[in-house]
Length: 162
Image (cartoon, rainbow, N blue to C red; front, side, top):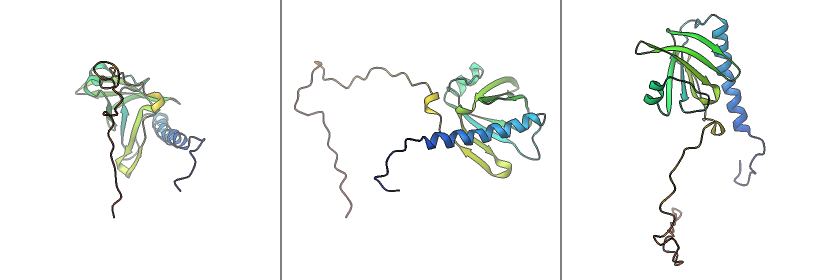
């Protein structure tokens, strides 16, 4: 594509991400319908944003994994329930049972190492709550008004290599 290609008015990236997340939902749904048994040597690594909306995990896990967490569905999991929006599952962490609820929009990676299959996703920005930041302190001069001489402007010249 050329540099003058116009921005798309169709959100292709978003559509593709949604379709690929549907793959995860279908796979997990088939496992649920099969009684929760994984066929053959299949097992899944699922990485998700712990702070995403609708994610529900125990407080000790969100403290330990404040940004992202990877779970493994292999031998010891129970109560797998899949909906159109996400899934919930029971897992054990250091022999402590936990119930997790994860929307598909929070998933950033899905891997089945048994067959060398993997998908990576971008976290859905619309679903992520904006981070709260303190007011910036470097936008004004100490007396509150600019001196107008442009002394706070930095010019950087990235000349071409010859």
